[in-house]
Image (cartoon, rainbow, N blue to C red; front, side):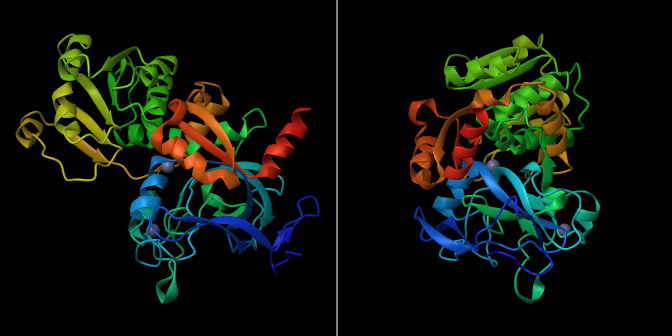
Length: 388
Ligand SMILES: [Zn+2]
Ligand SMILES: [Zn+2]
């Protein structure tokens, strides 16, 4: 039985010594294996994972390796488990932990900064200067589960208490996996200044972050919120999440359309979620003078950018990484208060052991998949029993 010294456990949640976990071997090669159940240290808990959403960044990591960074290099053949958008139940407390009781349902954010560098001290833990330094003699304790430490495509994972958010029982497992996505959108709007009530916001790209970006911007009072993209079904979901206008960039000139909608002035903010090669220049041309762009997507190639236009018009550019400044807590509050229905972007659920199928659905957008979730069998069964 699992009973590491200094770790508090409960008979209500018996924990096996080993668990099933997906491990990344070569590129695009995931293997379902048995691994030791991880042990929480100081300021950490063990989370029994109930659901994990697949993110476009997981697909990047599984194929290219980057942006994951394991022991200073690519994550292949290092017994690494990807997956970062998960939720579950606290089942063990590390030494000194009393912030979250055993049995508490939680969702997680990704990054636990080292807590000792300049950026962590400033609250910018997703830009921790000791990113990925959690091994060997230079172990600074940084964790970004699914990026620099083991993630959630498995049955149990350890999380720093700073990365946990308690969730109400009214929130389903699937919805709770979307909190970190909404949190990323919230962080982008935070970095733009956060004062967007009554201001015009364009969101480019109706992926999960873009769609929840629309929802969060609307919940924060932005007006109008304009969503751009190429797929009408996704733009339709954007409307349900609060977009006042949608623009299919295949049918009209997107810069002209934004200018028309904003009475010729241009928008106050653009949240760029498309990663398209000309997205930054287009965003700059959608803005009014002094406008701000948040870059939340990353293209594979460096982009050509209209810098003269940016300089002459005093346009600000912000790169964001992840879900910093406790934005996830604020997004979770909106979701708990039903300010928007994030479940509109959840389309499919598969058992954890069918992860390769789930990944194919997410990657190839089979049946118009947007957010695809996997759940360990136990979690699906428990949920069904609870519903009966
Ligand atoms: Zn993600
Ligand atoms: Zn740090």
